[in-house]
Length: 137
Image (tube, rainbow, N blue to C red):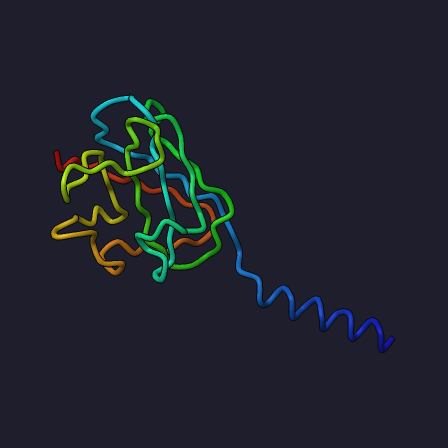
């Protein structure tokens, strides 16, 4: 009996600490072409705009829909870029990106990326959002 009580306490403790996870589907609008890939990153605040966002996905630009599986419940900012040449890098001419960028909440770039607060969304279970792609050249 004592073993059973200890085991049940352990299992209850594990389930309390684990956050639920869901799939986040991102529709990307306003692409200027069907060339290349659409790349999505779903980032917690400390990794926003960093190349190490833990939840990522991509799809052909012609599809314009990316589903990122297994995103735990939490607050994130979603960023997207239109990798028109499929090289994995955001191309720039000078300081301005030459490939499209977009953020959750339609947060805009001014003199750099938007703040996390402007782009922050709440993810709880499966979700869907739309990002409008913007081109600066």
